[in-house]
Image 1 (tube, rainbow, N blue to C red):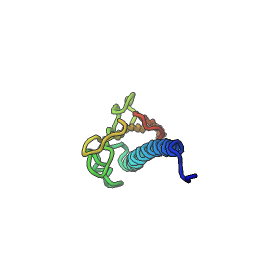
Image 2 (cartoon, one colour):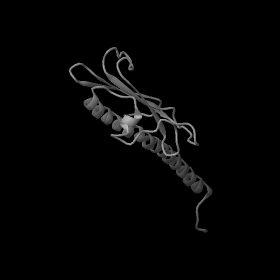
Image 3 (cartoon, helix red, strand yellow):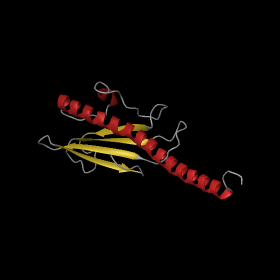
Image 4 (tube, rainbow, N blue to C red):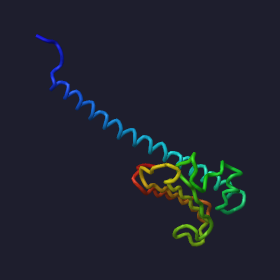
Length: 150
């Protein structure tokens, strides 16, 4: 009697390894996209903090990245090699949805698709910060695309 594996046993092992590989690759793809989206979350949080500092100093929010650059590292407004998102800011009364006379700012992080970065998802993050007359700030977050969570 020869010792060894039968063809059926080898096929079963190969199928099991294949299924595990597919599961692992799917999870890896999700983890990398979440890591990329954490860049946007971190920079938007920094912009929000900088906008609060500018509002305290000047009485108004700003859309000037140069002014924000005095408080935080200036976020990229165009796609480059080191960032997965580009950022845009609008500020002032009327610049935000249903803004009216309420001071607010809106920052949008849009996923870069250039420079060899193949987008796994078309993701855009938008954060709107409004302040009422009493100085209370209300934050609205909109996450579009297929990346979950904020």
